[in-house]
Image (cartoon, rainbow, N blue to C red; front, side, top):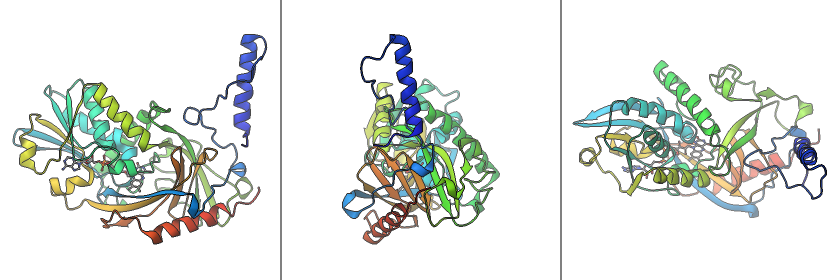
Length: 384
Ligand SMILES: Cc1cc2nc3c(=O)[nH]c(=O)nc-3n(C[C@H](O)[C@H](O)[C@H](O)COP(=O)(O)OP(=O)(O)OC[C@H]3O[C@@H](n4cnc5c(N)ncnc54)[C@H](O)[C@@H]3O)c2cc1C
C-alpha cells in the first residue's frame, strides 16, 4: 500500500510523541490512521490510486426513487381536526444531507408549547433525525413506519453530504431558499459531531471535472450559498491532476455518510432514548387522526404523495452499481453527471436521474454505460 505524505507525517508525529513520553520506541507503533476518524485525504491528486473498474468486480446493483418536488421540500404545519401535522418530506436527491436541518425546522414549528406524546411517520434519514430532535426536546416519540431500514430509500443513497437535485432552480422561492440554507447549515454542523465509525461518517475529498466553465452562482460555484460548507475549494492546474479529457478540475471536501452504518445507529439511538417503533402503514388522514398522538411529523418521503395527495411529488429514479471495496481510495469523482464515492461496503458508481420513472428493477443498459464510462475514466490516468 502506498503511504501518502500526510499519512507519513501523521505516523512520524505519533512515533516522536510516543518516543518523547516513553523515552524510546521499543515496539512497532500501532497504525494511527483510522479510515473514519482521520482518513488520509489526498495531499496531491497526482498520487490518487485509480479505481479498478471491471464487470467481474461488481458486487451489487440497486435502485431507489428520490422523492422530488420541483418547488422543493415541504416543511410546514397543517391542522386536521385536533391533530397538528408538521410535514417534512420531498427532499429529492438531498434527503440524507438535509435530514437534520429540515428536522430542526419542523420540530421548531411543532414542539414549542406542546407536552404530549408525538408521532413520527417514517423511519428513513428524515424520520429518524426528526425523532431524535423530538426526544432532545424532552418529548416521548412513537415512530409509525411502513418499512424499516434497510428497506428505505435512505438506505440506497450514495450518500455524499451535499444537497443536490433538491429542487428546480426556476421554482425556488425566497422562503424556500431561506429554509434550504438554514437546513443545510444546521445539518452540516450536526453531522460533524457524529463523525466516526459509530455512525459511518467521514470527510471525503471530491474532484469535479468539467469541460465548460463553472456556473459560479450555482451550488458548487465560488458564489454558492453553500460556499462556507465547501472547505478546501480550489481549482487545480493540469500539472496537479492525473485526469485526462477535462478542461476544468475543481476540488472541495464534503462528508460521506454510509447508510448501512448510519441508519441502524440512528434507530438504536431512538430506541435507547425510549422511542417506540411500530411497523405500520398509515393509509389515510382519518387513520392518522385516530392516533393517540396529537402532534405528528410527516416524514414519509415519496409516501406523502398518496397519503397527503401531493401530486407535485414524483420519483427521480437512481441506480447504483457497487464494486468490491478499495480502502486505499479515499476520494470521490464527479464527471458527466456520473459519480464515484468510495465507501467501506464498496465503490459506489452512480449518477442516473430518471424523472417520473417508478421502476425499481435494475437496468442492464444503464449499468453497462456506468461501468464503461468509469472504466474509460480510471484507465486513462496519466502521471503528473
Ligand atoms: C441512487 C440514489 C442516490 C442518492 N444519493 C444521495 C446522496 O448522495 N446524498 C443525499 O443526501 N441524498 C441522496 N439520495 C436521496 C435520499 O436517498 C433521499 O432524499 C432520502 O432518502 C429521503 O429520505 P426520507 O426519510 O424522506 O425518505 P425514505 O428513506 O423513503 O423514508 C420514508 C419512510 O416513510 C415510510 N412510509 C412511507 N409511506 C408511509 C405511510 N403511508 N405510513 C407509514 N410509513 C410510511 C417508509 O416506509 C420509510 O420508512 C439518493 C437517492 C438515490 C435513490
